[in-house]
Image (tube, helix red, strand yellow):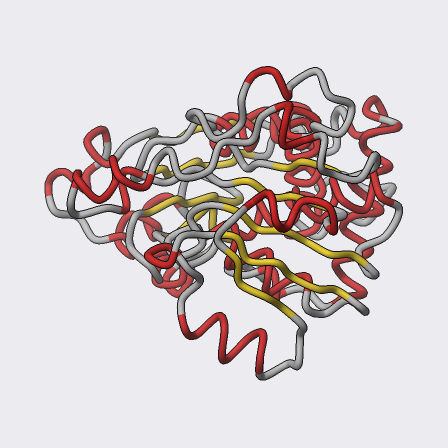
Length: 309
């Protein structure tokens, strides 16, 4: 039995197989419509989510399975003081696979250690968000043709943004990848990402404050929102939330084939006048998220191609 806590839980070969499977699901959805008949996915979400939770549910339903779970800590026995590990031991009796989101770093790992079924980390605090990273990789590979030889701009909340941390960890395994880290000083990537991931692996990067400075050189621009829920001081959030806004004027500075990605939800960091630009890929990205989660569910349930889960 395997779990997914981090993108690094998958080797490059396993990741390629997963992305290939996701591409085949996109092209041949009917082929996969009943492979998980009779199987149940538990979605255990201790904090709010729209895309991640619903895309997991859509993924399992598209495979012919069913879904159970809860959408907030208040609607689970966590409100009575039940531990994550106890909750997961109980859910193991009801479901075949589980996805868990929790505001505390490491909660998904704790859940997996007591689980009798595969557990997928659907986001743990500011730490990791591996299925969003798989979605990002599938989007980039599908639209750019490869995951190497790219200059990636990461913009916004790089301190608390778990999607950014996961994506950096995943992309450093590909050749000739360079990062431009675009953020105010207060929201720069944590030291452990800079020192233990980028510098330790000799990955070229630069840190800049102005988005306009970085735009002309980017192959991919990954925008993120400033996350109010990660701030202890509301004044700090208000001061930071409008620091970067991508609009049509700034897009004129970009390459004609640059991709704009965003894990969503956006607040105001991407103006709606960018939505019709052919380089805006964030809504396609959300659709790719369903395909990659379908592929992940099949992989963890050890689907063998011509057999059901």
